[in-house]
Amino acid sequence: MSSFAIRLFGDPVLRQPTRPVTEIDAAIVRLCEEMIETMYAAPGVGLAANQVGVAKRLFVYDVGEGPGVVINPELVETDGTWSYFEGCLSVPELAWDIARPKTVHLRGIGLDGEELDIEADELLARCFLHEVDHLDGILVTERLDPEQRKEAMRVLRQRAVGSSSLVAPAARSDL
Ligand code: ZN
Image 1 (cartoon, helix red, strand yellow):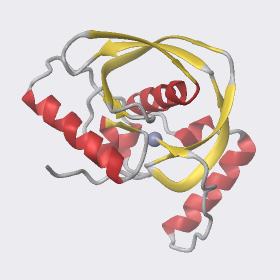
Image 2 (cartoon, helix red, strand yellow):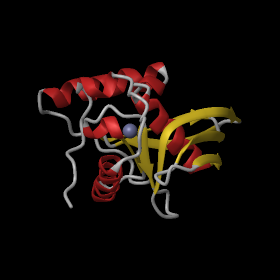
Image 3 (cartoon, protein in one colour):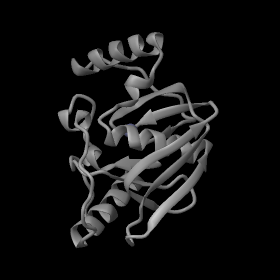
Image 4 (cartoon, rainbow, N blue to C red):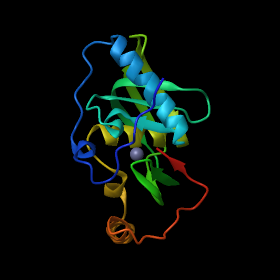
């Protein structure tokens, strides 16, 4: 089995909303298996299909309880607020303390074709929010406050010319 190259900030595929999956065939199963391998190799706790250049509405995740796949995810409800150091495999070596909802109710379809209905809290909720954003063409940099965003853009601009030395805090999760 091979693993994918992860698309990075600036790649237009990350800005394009993905298309719903209409049939779970062998190609989708294989895609998910290779995405899980890519996520573990990174390492990260979540990976959306467009992060590997495939514009399909699905993501894989593992927040420490084994791998999961959600096809055609939709957020039904969110509640509360929770701040957490969040990074993104498509914006490597950076992370920010970001407030997002604490709990989410997510619906979708599993790789076996069965309907999923998941109530998630804290890190798993964060993962779902981050991956659904990816599938809608939204990057974590759009979830920053003005000050964080200004600093992020400065670092990313420096990185584009090869002179960045900023390193993210070690305690974080990359999604
Ligand atoms: Zn990400």
